[in-house]
Image 1 (cartoon, chains in turn red, yellow):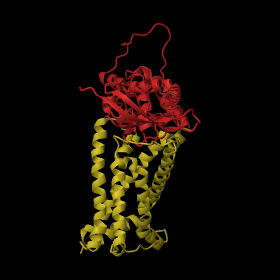
Image 2 (cartoon, chains in turn brown, green):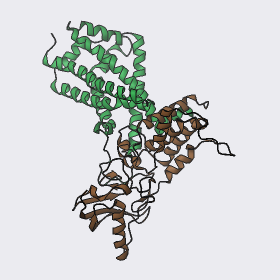
Image 3 (cartoon, one colour):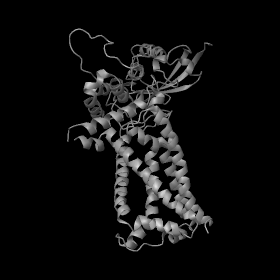
Image 4 (cartoon, chains in turn yellow, orange):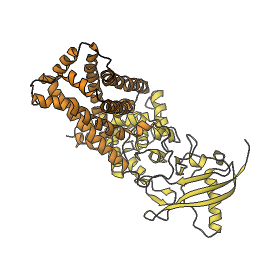
Length: 255
Length: 223
């Protein structure tokens, strides 16, 4: 692949704190290699900002290999940028052309308040998991992983759902800021396995209740979440969540 | 608390929308079937008999109350969902391609639903309401609905509003039919694909059959 250098104009959302007024600020960056990652491009810009005595742009990042789900930003209107099934850290600058103007914004959802600049607080996801995304296990020695037979299809589907890295791109892309793809994946990965059975009913009810409390919207099944998910989580997980919910509510002994 | 969840939680509201939506789909099948009686081309005899069965008989009249109830639940729940969903973003995006992978009509269900509601107000005031008023809301004598259709559909703007209402219905069904099943928990891809196909077929065929009636009267295709 041909290597080239670029001059780019970045319009980046700057916001000093959660309750502070934010706004876009333009930055010109030169000599950006086509083989840099999007985050490396920000590193270059931040080095310069620090040298110039300016506040560097705050953004979340951790593993930089596409599996941690930290690098959240909306690039030119697309969560994680223009490439499909991709995270921001794995987005390379060859996705852009010399002279491009790129607009970078944080995830937009009331449930994900901006901490600073492009960083948002995604602890709402943690609380949804805490509400029901767990299983009961016996203490003592670890049980043999293969003691309970599980059919291949269920194991594969559960694994595909478990690939969710909790990055929040589904919420960012959804017109309703709904977290159903995230919750659908988390409910499904446990609902598909025998280990998830003891909490099957309480899990889905509690997780949906927590999502409501956190201020996420409902699902309209537009499919924008599935299209933007870096891990290709299928929207059928949302239908499975709906089934689990309906079953749990109808079979509950609660009046 | 348990049943309340079906009406008030983020998932429960969608389950209500899906269930009432599918009930309304069943109603559309009945309605379009009755309408097709005009094509018996017998001066409205068969159509008026069918209309009499629906209007002059307690069983369909009691079911009619259920229809209005589910329709109102669908409308109110839909409006609440739309208002809730719209309030969740806060600051909107400066540039938004976030809708990749989604169809415009799937994002516009509330708008399409509102257009259908506006059409329904006209439609009900054209036929259902005057007929029931004439009957004294009991099983009184009905008006000749075939003759009334002839008069109503001789007016150009009414025919145009009906066609626009049916286009809104078509797109509403295009997404709503299959989405309703998803909301009710159908996650098997074999059925989802089948239901999407059936839904698209339904969304085209039913509104076209409905549209044939005002068009036939306006252009005088019926003897």
